[in-house]
Image (cartoon, rainbow, N blue to C red; front, side):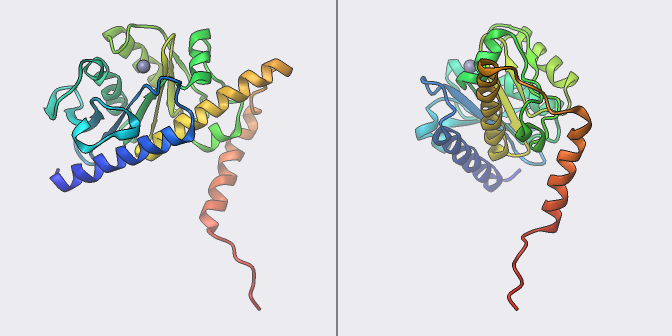
Length: 231
Ligand SMILES: [Zn+2]
């Protein structure tokens, strides 16, 4: 793990935090925290203070996956939630970024105590065929909260996020930008799910079509850019 790797990783967090802020999915308070696994190590970076609008590398601290602080300084409100991010990296070796927000529509599902099922095609295309499970309530960052997040992740291997009951959403992806996109897709699914209930009901994608949805995505991705014949 070189200092150049860490500097690159910090910049990815700063860029992804700005991207999610500009997407408009944050709650009114703008509250959130962002993390990234340092590739190939058992360490991760976590925003340890400051807002997503004006993060600097000095606002990002380095931790071991067990939560031990290795470098930097952490404000109390961030120290509370270190393990909420660490548990993602411990349980999902394929994940390189995680973001926690209070995105209002996703958090509405969490307040209602309801998971988001596979009601929106983008969830399937972003490898969330298990939908977005609900982690039972525990005080912010507490052992109970982290254990409930772990249970939700372990019982739903095909997801990119967990709803935190009465609190918010924790989204993750292969890198920080993918985590930001996962949070945005989850918020879109929540908006659509709530709107659908106003006019009828939110109907899940037929289970026999789910694999087909992903296969079609993969086939077109493999084909690459198609160009018109210039002759
Ligand atoms: Zn929170």
